[in-house]
Amino acid sequence: MTERPLILVVEGESRTRGALIGALGERFRVLAAEDPPQAERLLAEKDVQAILCDQTLAGGGVAFLRGVRARWPEPVRLILAEAAAAREMALAVDEAWIHQSIVKPWTAEALAQTLGNAVRLYRLRRDNKAVSLRMRDAPGLHDRAGERRHRAAGRDQGFDSLLHAAGSPLAVAIALARKVARFDISVLLTGESGTGKELLARAIHRGSPRAARRFVVENCGALPDQLLESELFGCKKGAYTGAHEDRVGLFELADGGTIFLDEIGETSPAFQVKLLRVLQEGEIRPLGSSLTRKVDVRVIAATNRDLESEVAKGRFRRDLFYRLAGFPLHLPALRERPMDVPLLAEAFMGESMRFLGKPVEGLSDGALTRLRRHDWPGNVRELQNEIQRMIALAEGPLLTEDLASPKVGTVRAEALGGGGAATGPLKERVEALEAAVIAEGLARPGCTLSRLAADLGLSRVGLRAKMRRYGLDQAVPDGECQAPEFG
Image 1: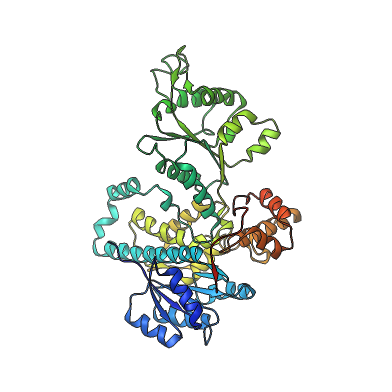
Image 2 (image 1 turned 120 degrees about the vertical axis):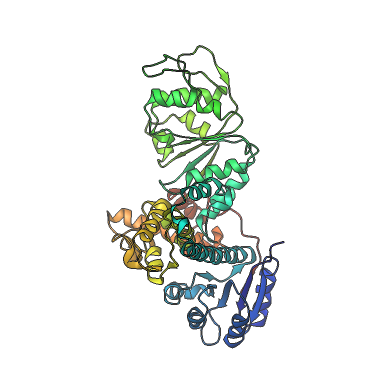
């Protein structure tokens, strides 16, 4: 049985310290200290993976964590802060290199998830360091393409492969996807390019009763109608110029499994009619054939377009939209979840080291600060490319901020509160600010609509309307959070 992770709680108030131990004790081995000297003794004796410290600690929680970082840099550092000090803590996160600031009041469930992600980050860093050492000790590993392919083939494609921090808007989409995975409902994934729609589709398949059967993928925007029809439904020899043999379509290959139709919003009205018939009748007719074949396939579709808007403009069939959108899920852009950047960066660093055959020890503080400040218009895919680029350019053991692309860290609108673009029409910039403020509120542990609406000076109805407008309407449930609050 795997030993539970070891964490350190530093809290001066005995009642709150007891509540924290109670909230985290089932999932972690918890060491508790009431002041910095006691905490430092425990750190010197034990292999602690994460530290949770209260902001109001004697001498200051930030100052304590700054000192810890100098002597024990490996444990992931987190701080509990009052809501009134949230802005101050946001600045301190970079200054003391604190992984996350947790705003009080906290809930047991959210706090345990946050510490779980901190432990995961600790292990990613440890594993990356081990890979780096192995590469230095065995230079032959650098050229083993077979190992790279083996890792890619064996990568976990379930929900746990979708890295995110506690409080991330992505956690909402994953939780909903877990619930719908076991039911044979068509799913429509929306979100910008590079947000991980195919990864989530694969996770849904892996979590479904169809997991033992095939998962097949088709990019519907990459082919003209005739070739797309042939790819999906199959064709007979001679059905069109270039059809030199009978071809089995992807729907038939996926029989009993799942088909993922990416970029579904790029299809023509003519093709949409043919796809609608397949979904309605559950049967396909290969090009050039007069016979139909029954298929049993679950469809997951994805698009970076606003399909409801496309329907209103007459560019996408309404009946097909409702066939596909049995269960719509929106994936947030990376700029809406900056708390996920450290986890993703560490994971991509490990992958890139193996792919490039080049060891590095990690990211410098300045480099990670710069990554966290970027808007990531290319989303997760852009971050992955950036990490790979930095490793390719690195000449020393650390990835430093000067290795980043010139654009990285320069386009994020800090003055707008994080989420929006720093340039563009005033209306777009104001909307970006509004969306970022709401997304930040939704990411707080224990968030409820009533509480957030009151904080923002809105009614629940008004808040809901803005959430729908910015694609955040699935971020929290209608009801109040039932988890107990402490702190």
